[in-house]
Image (cartoon, rainbow, N blue to C red; front, side, top):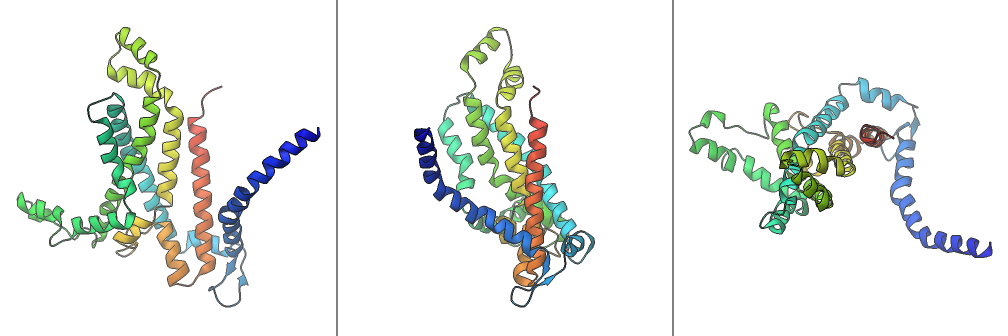
Length: 292
């Protein structure tokens, strides 16, 4: 009994630094954000307790623009699931077959994930530049000058122009996750299916995809929650403009905190982001839960 107690004590001592760090970096900021969300506070003066008024204003006031920002994030999440993940899955299935230059392709496709989002934002700013950007130059060179636009400066095109690099950047990330799952499928299962006359498509559908279902679940969770809290690339490209056309909750939160000095409302947006991310993670896990 004493030995068991001693072992547990040692385990607790070894886990304590990580536990303290976890609480200090993750739990404490969440608790503080929840606390400030119940106040009207400019970050300097006295706080005024207003209960749930910030939450009510968040969803009812057009001046805040949270519903539009949330709609943009949900659109990004939807496109991530229906465009980004199928692309990543297709690449993973293709590379998982052991094609020539497999490692080189993996490195190339994963490279955008390694590059800073600020650098990627600057690259896409050059691509979208209305005067010398490669997109408009290409359209002019093929006689489609009428299709040239100020892509990031027009409300009609800004959101679509922003979503393209956001989706493109993390295709390689999900591809690598799914590739690891594809490579873990036992060779015997593939060979048995091929001996029975199954095509590559049937092998992928009936063997590979069910086998990597847990990886697919993780990828969907990462794609959706990542879309909800997307910030850096959008901030570099448009900072939520023009006229809030590309606003997302994270850029709106920064605006509330540092431009409008509404720390209570900014904390409220942070809390809503946490709730949404956890809620979608639980929902996706429930959808992918295997029947027992």
